[in-house]
Length: 422
Ligand SMILES: C[S@@+](CC[C@H](N)C(=O)[O-])C[C@H]1O[C@@H](n2cnc3c(N)ncnc32)[C@H](O)[C@@H]1O
Image (tube, rainbow, N blue to C red; front, side):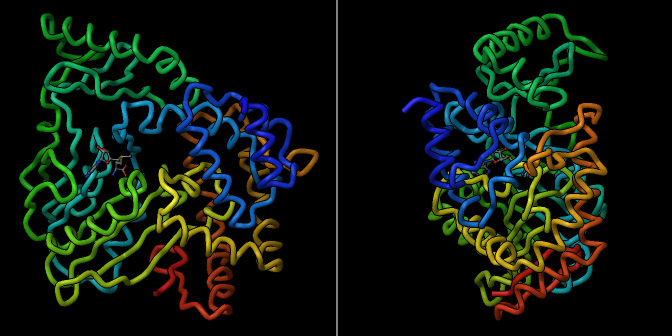
C-alpha cells in the first residue's frame, strides 16, 4: 500500500471518508521508509475514532505534525532510544497540583523526577518552585558533552563523542526539518564541532561546549543521577513524578515501574505518572498514594483541552496497551457523546480559536491552520490561555457533571483538571 492509499484507507475506516483535502495532503508527507510511523499514525486514528472525534475536528496542523514532525520525535528516528525531549514550563500545573494537594502532609519533601530529560528544565523549575525541598532528577541519557552551534541548536553526545540527540533552538516543524533532513550529516557536524571546541574552547556566546553539563544545574537541594526506572537504589522519596516516559513502553513496564515506585517511596508519598505538552496543555495523569506498602490509585485527571487538542499528545502512544490512553479516550468519548455539553464546548472553544487565530474552522467547518503571524514560542502560551478560559467559563465543571451523571465519581481538582476517582 503506498502513502496515498494508506491515508485513504485510514480516512474511510476511521472518518467515513470525510477528512479534509488539506489534512490528507499534509499527511501524505509521511516518510515512506518509516513503517513505525505508519503504525503509530494508524494507532492514533484508532484513538481519535474511539473518542468519537469527527473529521471536522482534525486540523490541518494535526496533518502537518503527523505527516512531517512525528517521524522526527519517535524513537525510530533515534536508533530506538527514547529522545530526552522536554519543554520549559511543561509541568507548571503539575507543580501547582503537588503544592495544593489535599492528601500530602505539609512540610518539606524529597522528590524524584524520573526520566527528567535533558536539559532538565522542568526539574530545575520544580526545584525553584519548591526551594526547600530536596529534588533528584534521574535519566538514563544524561550526556557527557553538550554542544550548542552558532544558531543555538543543541546536541548531546556520549562518552564516545557520538551524538545521542539534537534539537533546534526553537523546535518548530521548519527548524526540525532543517536539522533532520539529513540527520547523519547533522550528527557529523555536531561531532566535528565537538572536536573543534575541545581544541579551541569558547568562553561565551555560541557555538559553545559544556562538559558533564548536568553538574552546573546542581545545588545543595537539587541533584542528578544517570539511571532508569528499576535500575538503581534511589532511597525513599515523598513524591515521584514520572512524566512523558511511560508512554514509550508496554504496559508490563508500567506495572514493574509501579512496583519500583512503591519500593522507592515513604508511607503517604504521592506518585504522579502522566504526560502533557508545553505550558501544561493536553495534560493527563494518574495519582497514586503509598498506603500500607503499596500504591493506591487516588485519581486519574486530565485537562479539558484534550477533547479538541491543538497538538497530538492526547493520542500519542507507542503501544496499543497504553492504560492512560485507554482511560483518557474513554472519558473524552463519554463527553463527546453528550450533545448539550459539546454544543456548549464548541460554542465557546470555536470562538476562542477565531479570536487567537489558532486553527479556527475554515469555510467548510474544518479546523484549519495557525495564523502565520503567531510566533512559535507564543503558540502554546495562547493555547494554555484558551484552556484557562475554558475552565474559567465553567466548562470543566460541566464536563464533571456529565461524567457524574453516568455514575462516575468525578470532580474538578485543585488545578482545574477533570479528575475521576477509581
Ligand atoms: C520525552 S522525555 C521526558 C522528559 C521530562 N520528564 C518531561 O516531561 O519533559 C523522556 C525521557 O525518558 C527517559 N527514559 C527512557 N527510558 C527510561 C527509563 N527506563 N527510566 C527512566 N527514564 C527513561 C529518556 O532518556 C528521556 O529523557
